[in-house]
Each structure stands twice: as structure tokens, then as C-alpha cells.
Image (cartoon, rainbow, N blue to C red; front, top):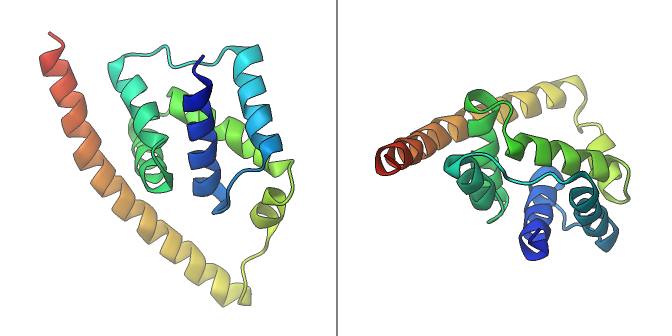
Length: 143
């Protein structure tokens, strides 16, 4: 396994999920998990491309995750994000960010949920346009 790629994934996914950089502990555990469990990108070309693009940064991770959440529910990307989230839930200081209650009481929570839903819809629209065209191109060129 390419440890440089796995570290890039861990950094990108952590910044996407928490907004912070991962600790050395989280990176080590992410690498250790991949080494022991053998999760790799063994899918088709598009699957490998989706994981590769998601490792470029949190914005790309958001786009790839939005796309995969609807169109590729069982993708390797989604599994890697679950692994990263599980590690972050158990490691300081990320768990504090993940467990924090939204500020502003009930109204603040509703506003944050609404803003999050709007952001997801925008990401999904952009990701569907981008990744569907890439997937179509790969299907046509791959013949």
C-alpha cells in the first residue's frame, strides 16, 4: 500500500470531518488499519479515481462524498470515511469537535441543520454534474 496516499487521505478526511488537522496518532492508526485489514481501492477505474480525487483536500472530499452518498453507497470511499470518523471519535481533540452541541439553542440548531442541508444539496448538484461526466467519459474511453 502507498503510505503517502493513505496519509493524504487521512489528512483530507480529517479536515473534512472536523475542520482540524489529524494528530500523528490518528494518522498512525489509519495506516495501521489499512495494513492489517487490507482495505484498498480494488474497484473499477472510477472508484480509484473517486478515492484519489477525495484525497486532494476537504473540498474535493465533500464533493466525492456527496456523490458517493447517493450514487455509490457501497464505495470504498464511504468505507474509508467511516474508518476515519471512527478513529476521530476516539481521539482527542477531534472527539470534542464531533461531540460539541450546536450553539444558539433550538433556533441555532435548526439554522445550522438548514444551512448544512443547503450546502449538501449544492455539493450534490455540483458533484453529480462533475463525476457523472467523468464516469461517462471513463465508460466510453474504456471500451
